[in-house]
Length: 248
Image (tube, rainbow, N blue to C red; front, side, top):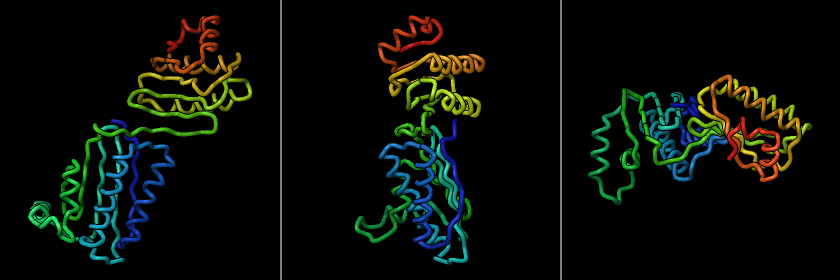
């Protein structure tokens, strides 16, 4: 499956550094244009803080001379978090059994069992803990915002949304960005050009659409135009472009 986001780094064994690491992860997710629904956003925050804080306190015993390494991998179908500390590891079964046996009003010892109850699959190998969560219930999308173009990969569909009119003054920038995007992104079956934000078009804008179509045909990809105004759709019919594009 497609990897939507991946990062790895390390931090010092303090709660402050663990918190900073979580903030850095979410900042990079946001800057990368990753869109996560609210429930998954909450779950990811909770899981990262729980795993990081456990490594700080129980793995490295707040020893600032020891680092905590992590990797976060978000794919279309699964979230994976790996955290490695400088400790000796632990018996996951014993920890979970103790957490479940303790009183509901206990002060501590509920984090890992809570992750499992959320749907995470947890495994421990020496000083590394791995947490995996299937994302069939959640929405994760990739998008990148540029000045005049928004791109988003949803499953096997690459969506191109010009955030401007398709007119001569804008076409050069649109062509350059779209060309690079189509070259770097190969794992899609079709292209949707969403024209809902484009009120006007001229012959250079038509040239841009034809250019996208020709590139897609070379890669054996389908092109669909959505969101065009009735007047723009009528223009496509006049130019017989509806015989080339699928217009919805």
